[in-house]
Image (cartoon, rainbow, N blue to C red; front, top):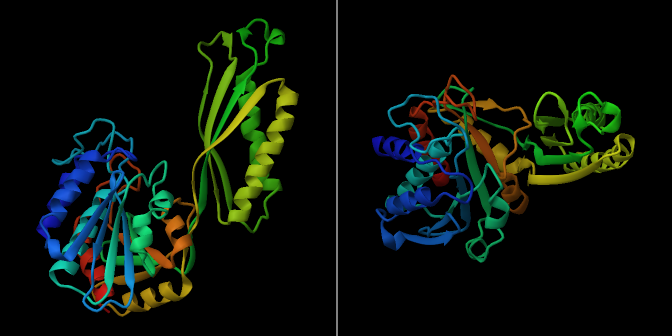
Length: 369
């Protein structure tokens, strides 16, 4: 398994953001070319890759997805194999995901199984989202799997731990952008302006009432603004403001409710603050909803596997575009323990590489059960 640790380290050094994973794709293809050609069919999709491995006596096709993009984060790990791309890092573990997937390709090509396996090396999971378009391709239709499987590293669980649950695992998510335009001017004459700093502050507060007063308190909804940009200097009243945020809900219906209320509140807000508001939504991910029967079967398999420990996961407000795949094909996602001090999307994330061997062997055993 040392080879796949080195592969992980090689990939860790070349993180690339969504649909720009050119070096990553080239590296993956170079590794795939080392496997027996008669066992593989490979097709390119943008910066992603489809890999189809024909089984010995196929009764079904298993789909296995791994994501390949990095994040716009400056790495602070000081590892000998740290990112060579300034401002970018594999801070979500997709380098792990890729090395595990390549290990599984090797397993099923060198030691064939009965079923077909379709591997999807998917770009742009972080943003803008590649899953929805990747499964809409003719290639996916040609090799359409009967079930889908995916994993995600989990720093909070120790190596050797696997966690999942039937039903909802990850939330619906949507990026949110609001541009406000009023009338700027001298700080000494506020009555002659429409101050967008004040407007932005009030709007953030008002929109929180959607969660507290429009959503069923038994439902879980988050409306968060992580970035506000306004003004130029301290003594000029800001003419414009830009708000960037995220909506997260545990049901598709709640997502629509929140968006409807935001649109209605903005209509009134423009009148109240004599400004113009432009609303936009960015990347939106559908909930990860694990198939109950398949997940219970997987849990039974893992629980009876002496080499790993099963933990029942809690649902989370995390977003994952694997949800679009599970909307199309029944399947499941599970957490893989990597025992790291820092969490996902942290500049010092350093997962335990021992988890790579654990995952490759576990999923290979699952394929062969």
